[in-house]
Length: 300
Image (cartoon, rainbow, N blue to C red; front, side, top):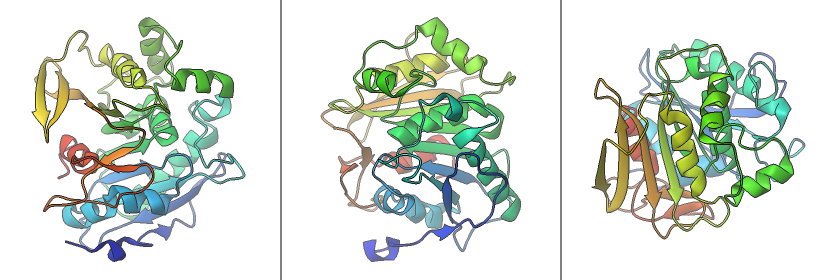
């Protein structure tokens, strides 16, 4: 098991990639055992975090060593957002072909080319503003991703400006279910197969209300043709997991609401399966979202 000191400064800068209309920075981690045609996970940090701090807390690079996964960490610059948040609510940063989404798309293209990654095995995850930006990427570039995981995030285009964003984070207003589905369909000309969706949220999150988790699920249910109650409910590491399966029996949406947890990424530091380090928004609650998300995507 790597010690936490091995985890510091494991990322390297992605020096060049396409155009960068969103003016973002990028870091990568390619494990020594990375196989040709291996998978890529794109990881989006939350507000006040950096690529490095999110990697350290979540344990993604530890898991990457274990399973042979390439990692790409787009990073926000303070000049774009004083809290280092991704601008998931600004109209210039929520559409295909421009702003932060296009920067991230070009980073992915570069890493896929540089490291012979299997383009059918590209995934994205993020926390908070990074989770909301993961929603943006999954809607605007669905053909790029096999799956996405949104942690303490918000549905795609649930807000169009800063004021709306604050209100949505508190769980008020927001598009109707019919509109939620249409927003994703109208974001690109893609018609499937759609990325699978994993949703994680703290039951006691007072920063981003967990009603947003249910809205994210509803945004994708119609697209995956899995409307209505979950196919099954089970317990994983002591927490409830709801799963929606398509007609072929494939798990296409999962949702974890972690009771008693506030705003952050659920991690499990101790034990044989432990990953990451506890930090302000890295909450050691006894379940590793990193490990379970990788497992949902058949990477671990």
